[in-house]
Image (cartoon, rainbow, N blue to C red; front, side, top):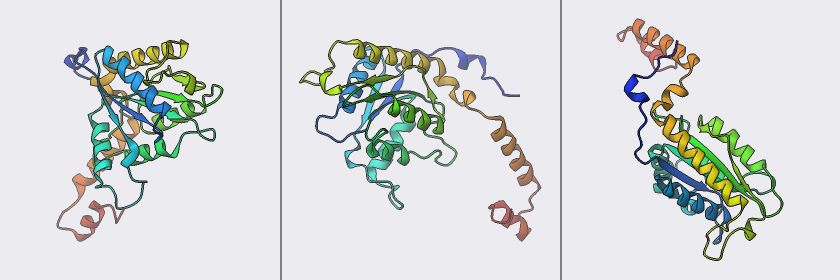
Length: 236
């Protein structure tokens, strides 16, 4: 049976939720960045602590670059966050390589720590033409794979070049109203789940596997060479 959190953990904290915003374009006037910035302003108005990651200096995912400062910064921000907002343009019917590269650099686990597990997630997209939902659907797939709690609402902005003022602020419209809706929902879900996120994504199969490993380890004789091989996994 799953073990429910202790009662004190079920009390809601109202200190500022920590929200990380990622966007998927390197253009000087990036509409996915402008949308993320507008969302960030809404989140700050709700009382959140907001941080952005600029992907321009992030290397393409490749072996041997884990110690790159931008990789380390992205991973640290993901660990810092209690919720995230992903904003991405649609290109060729799906997400951009710029955005996917950021997700590829965030591993499913670092040691025993999962940088995204149980964190809330809101997904948004911008379109150069008519409205589409291909990108937000793909972002939802990624969010599920990263074991995040993706909220039901989402934002898709059609003809994004028409929806922002010259100073980068979003025009008053039904699209902006939806952004506010999504950020409010993210705020609520983050407040409700952040202290019990490990419980929410705890899995029976993983508990069973951990118990089986603990039982095997308890039977190992450290002075037996065969057991030492099994302890590091190579003899199993």
